[in-house]
Length: 173
Image 1: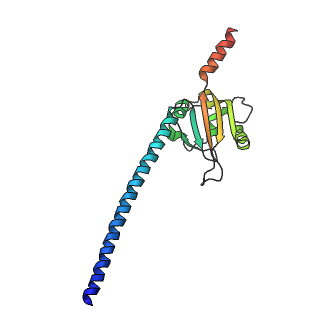
Image 2: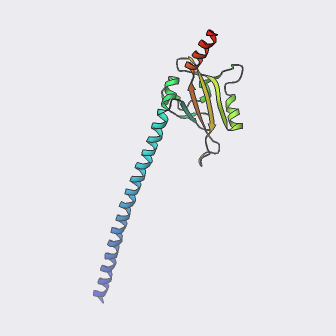
Image 3: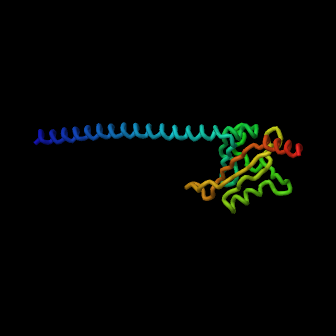
């Protein structure tokens, strides 16, 4: 009897060791899969970041209240601010309406009602206080599970050279 009991205990211990080895193999495999997927996500994130930073247009993304959450390299170049200085700032503080009789934040109401604002000329205020003529477009970001209201993504193109050319052309006529 005792030897049969010991055999059962030994069999159980062997099964437990097998299960432990199997669990360790599964864990190692899972860790490898997570590592590969993490690398792929990082590669895709870097690709998107490099694409955005290669754009000539300044890109600003905001939360629902219009607070800047991220910018690309062109945004830092045109504004003169570093990315960390722009992040957390209200986007509408950087712009004046081209027609200064209109409120500078009127585009936000238009964006909320239409979903987009396209090709509006306005003034961008740089860190040094200069006014840069720009074309401004914006659209609502898609809702995500954590936010009830969408944020915004805004593209801004410096049109200083175009404005200079238009002025020279008008003077030549």
